[in-house]
Image (cartoon, rainbow, N blue to C red; front, side, top):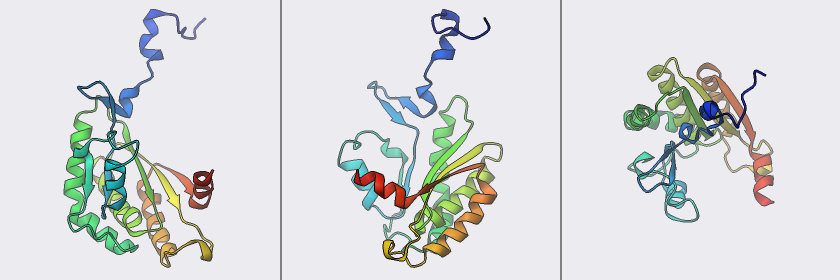
Length: 189
């Protein structure tokens, strides 16, 4: 029939696993994610880049940490303002990665919407991506906060979430909602 056969040599492109969509191969032969790590304070990204099993995984040229390293203080407006302040550097990194892509179709953004960086700077970058790449798809994996009062130390997370939801609705083509409470349960296992 009409269905492709894995044994058919002419269908080699069909059975290719397409690692090149999300990774590129370094000169040393290992695969590097086509990912940018963006944060306004250095603690998490530095830990990821310099400790543990993933320390040699990411391209150090694709890491952005704000120079002052102070973060957004769990404040959407502070994150948004700093996103505006730093967006050119981040978009330059995105441009560099997209220029090295054979067939750019879109972007995947992973962020939290409870604190200031993921919600505020994430909102700004989402808008900037849509302006800079108007015909590309944008999908987000958005971590929604714990809503129980006793599980959160971020008093303004409902405000951060509402402000971010507007930008997700206007600028993302698909949003995968991840529940932080469920993620915490998985991490304990």
